[in-house]
Image 1 (cartoon, rainbow, N blue to C red):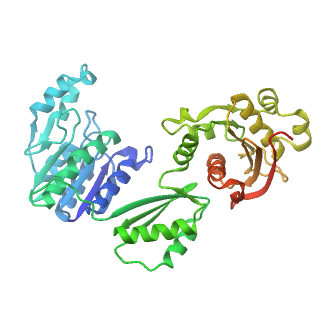
Image 2 (image 1 turned 180 degrees about the vertical axis):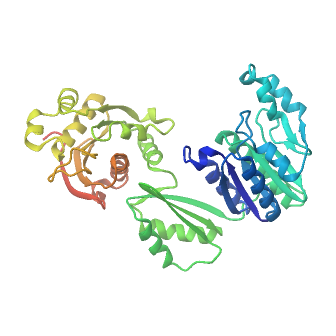
Image 3 (image 1 turned 90 degrees about the horizontal axis):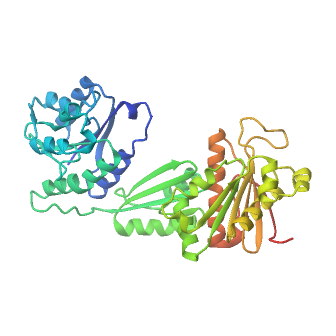
Length: 425
């Protein structure tokens, strides 16, 4: 069965929001053998929507569209579907009743009731009629129109659209969706995707095994999809070759959080050049309060001295951008928060502030452990945000490597130096 995905919205075209619906739909559909052959994003312009729907319905067996089903004047999808397929619009009583009883549209019912209009023969997808979305069986084709709100799109796709597609494929026998292959996602850090690609190219594999490389700076994601035995075999080889760089099937913040939680460790942070981004990265994970105690943003030399206890002589002799200052920042955070570990960052994120000796991109990252303090000197490239992001992710990865392997694996592509000292000199 040939299918297409259509995403409608000016905000997607302009890049104002990330199209997470495309990634979610692609993964789910591919896992059960409904690989989309075309994915299109178009603006909220009626003539373009009509033209695109006509073509996709003619060329493909199924279509899943997202966006343009709301109550505002730029929500044009339903009308465009009716025009493209030459169908009348009919007011759906169940949808209208749901809108009437909805608190959200209590004062704007006349504007919102357009959402109750559906093309003739269309069926609402939501069982309780509170999420707008509908399906059409048109000339032997299956068409699905879902809202653009990610939570609503994902709920309808997983709970309603996929079972209907699978039932259609089985000739009406069963709505159960059987996976036609095994999907594996792996996240790597401090690894160039070309190195990963070169290694995989040297391994004999079948043409049916699908491999995707996705650089999500500063991480790299690898997706494998195919026969269970072949996926497991390749996974084993990859894990052996890139053991240290392989974070796991989830991102760095999640993996490190689980390691800390499993070992019942507490973490604190002290930040300068990252300005709170490190703490934000750590706390982006639900449940991070179980292992993250607190963070300090000490941007000025004075705040480093007053809050973290960095010695004035340390800053005077070595400077604020140094192994010594980073280590004292980490120690100060560890002592103040009474945690098992502490991470600290200090450096020049730019674009101003760099010198010939300390150029923009220079960052010192320190890790205070129960017995020792380690500091690594890095030079990252990119704009201010990229440097801050690289520093934050690298700090989390330093902790990951220490928890898994100890200090023996503190080796990074961008590292320029390394120092360590006992927790109490």
